[in-house]
Image 1 (cartoon, rainbow, N blue to C red):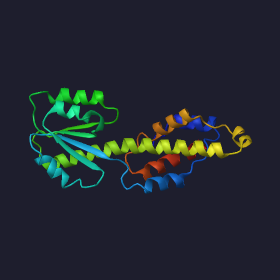
Image 2: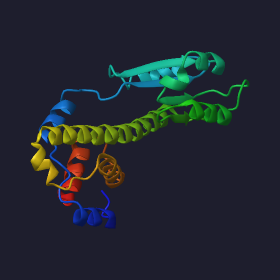
Image 3: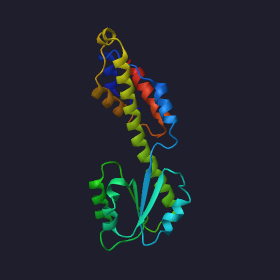
Image 4: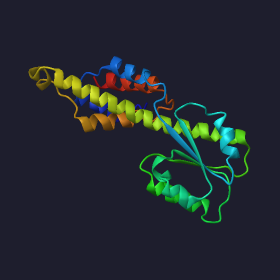
Length: 206
């Protein structure tokens, strides 16, 4: 969490950000064993590498696919659905760099591209784990922030009009921007850790 001058300025200019139902948010996260489904796509002439990774990543929220043709993969919707792409072999039909740029230009969300380059399977597994952690950290923060925004809005609506009217409450866009900025350095992707950081931010505002 950042210790910026922005937070101090907001503390002086805003008296209340609104109540947040932390227990409800925590319950929502605890009810989900897997927050995200992940599609990991391999480009290789055989599915040998993919099958080795399958032995490590056995969770039901993982989907594995293997292609040996870039055009076929794009027609299948890869550019929309894939989270991690592993380039195992060299392909004459398109360079790895150009294909990566093409995927990134079509993606609406985060995409991680890993090039095996004859590395051993252990290094590939570590690279996949790091990519998963990066994606999870970004998306978990977004979900935590949106849940806080929603809980705060519901709480403010439920309060008597005369109470909310007398309080100087930060508007939704400013509040979202502040949370995203202050939580940008949160390294651990676990929801409870990001929630804990968010609580510190909000306590500072109040």
